[in-house]
Image (cartoon, rainbow, N blue to C red; front, side):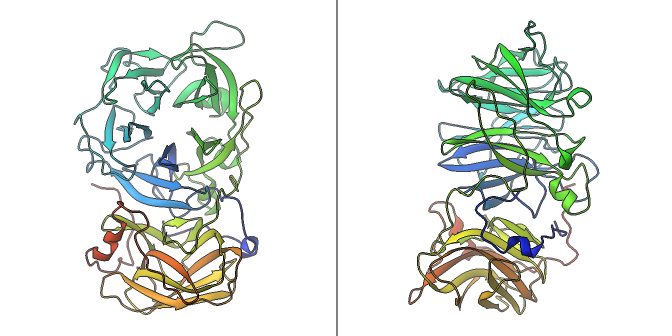
Length: 488
């Protein structure tokens, strides 16, 4: 995305202990499927392109965090026509973890639904079936939209897949076999009672099925229809994963930044609290587009009443509070971002990196906690001219605490170190601001060091192939006329 949100600098001067919604601002994201992997919160999203006029999504974007404020963009980890040969138009994904495997369920637009498997969220994903898992030809699935898959694994290890759309009789579920790549048919119609009446439909159901469990109760949530409910996120509660359920109304009503737009939710427990992901046009509206096909994912904390019903979720521009500060003396990936402008995320070998789109590009990293005054900062970049990175404290136009000169690195990544002044033992946000001939400059990672010490810029996490950035193949500068395009 080349046109990014403009933020009033004065609003960003003070340290922020809360997130910024939407959670990613350099691209559009939608249809979030949240899950936890090795004590880290992930969300797989469909990917809207800037300016698109239809729902045409050909890849999935993976984001993750351990603090709810700075989100790592792992790039496009699953691409239609490439990672799966029979499916091109990737509508809302559904992800679940079982036995240290990641299972990704994906629809080809309005159906059918396939499944891919990986050893870690970033992939690579394989298509074990080479064809659809669920289609309209399957018993019990002939009349509904076979899309919006949501996978759920219960405490006993049994798996379920929820899907469907286009009416209150069109919510479906199937039992997944232990292998998670085959299912038991016929599809089961999901129903909930309402106002004490017998359950014959899922009231106001339209799309976006999801299941989560809390205190032994099963919560089936979904996007309700437009005429009656304005596409609110409704829910029903039951004692079993396939029902019967009792309809409880809306947990999240549609709101100004998403009026008369679809919505899609997922609900995840993470470090003792529950969070809900959803999408809206918040970023598109900030950019003065207000395009219903440009959606962005946000996050809020979700709370329960004493009787187990859900406290109404109020969408915000802030999101949850930061869970932990950033460690400046660790090697931090450049793509773990709170906010940004005029950048995009590209791939360098197997690692996602930040690519500058010229002067005025900046990155905000929120909530550093310096236990002592730093003496230097080292960055790993691939530069194509006389560019610079200024590190500024507290705001885009805040005081400069480091200025890093970047020279042409001959299409390879290089480490550059600069002195740091004006930072003590404190907690603050930092902004990395590109200058000079910065178009196309790629930024991989950075690390601060205490005075008298050197930052090694070692691998961010062992076994994740991140040190492969040093051996990433040479690459010319990004074309100044580059635009993201759909595959043909």
